[in-house]
Length: 206
Image (tube, rainbow, N blue to C red; front, side, top):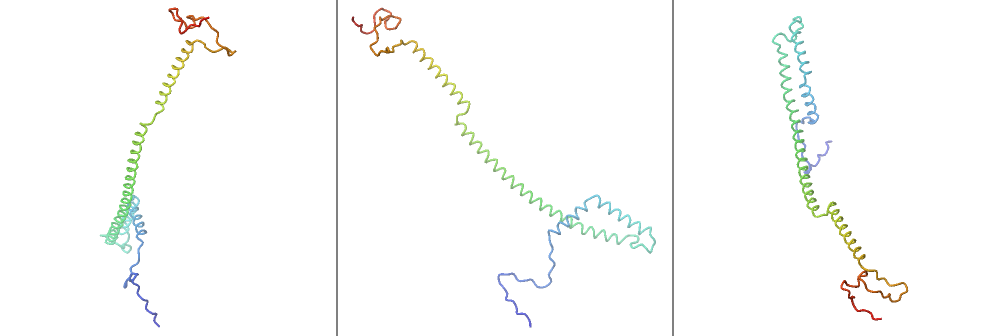
């Protein structure tokens, strides 16, 4: 009894009919082609190829006629070399394309990083300029030192003036008994008698 036919779903693609080609892992095939191209571009490959061709010539020239599998004109060798060249060229091109793709990705990444670095540099330049402008309005350490030194000098000068004034003024502190101060004759030593001999203010009568 045949199996019932599955209902076709519209949300899935229809399976292709006919011959199905084998799926190829492009990444693995690319790595393999790069390995071949890398080995073919070495001096060791040229040396081995030269030795093989020399042995091929010697065998098909010096060996007995019954042992020669590719006599003179070396048609089979020409066919082998042609096949090698026909396969080597696409493999080398494939390796170059993969390298070009990697270079393009690396170039785009470098361009992106350069753009980011340029933006960061411009941002830092603007921040530094803003800091310099802000620092121009802030008192620096040298400015504070100069202002403090000037203030200290003014305080010293004021203190010296006060001391000179205190030395010039007489001692008018009352006695310890708390009574009236003793009457003293006015003279020029105390500073209460002017130089013309007349006392300052009213004179107490005895």
